[in-house]
Length: 165
Image 1 (cartoon, rainbow, N blue to C red):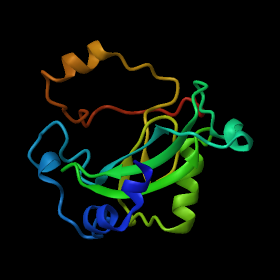
Image 2 (tube, rainbow, N blue to C red):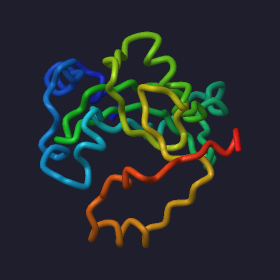
Image 3 (cartoon, rainbow, N blue to C red):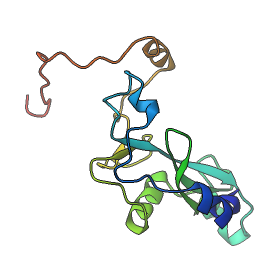
Image 4 (tube, rainbow, N blue to C red):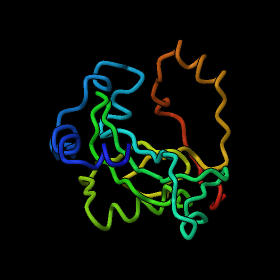
């Protein structure tokens, strides 16, 4: 799979970074639960593991957190399910945040004011929107939320900083 994702036929034809001034995707624009809250989101980013058969010398580096022998691959996908970026070939022990940092340093530009959706395994940065740390999200909450529309906070609401209170 790693050879397939990184080979010229697939990569050259199906993987391309979003344009800087790309319009808001229809999946965001047409859904009142998402627009205008995610209008600057470009897509989603995550790492995924592929089983591998490394040499005896490379086995420990290839062990992921579950003990399997894998290679880690960082991928970015748009809301229309197109691939924007694929960064493959990392050892299974490599964290998503490490791969993201290396990608940003080498060849992953993120336009100013835009961001990708990511999970809690990624660093807190302006180019990523990650879940709140220490907050548990439950499937039941998401099921109920599917029936409701997201509404902006009332203008009379004030938010206080617990660090200054």
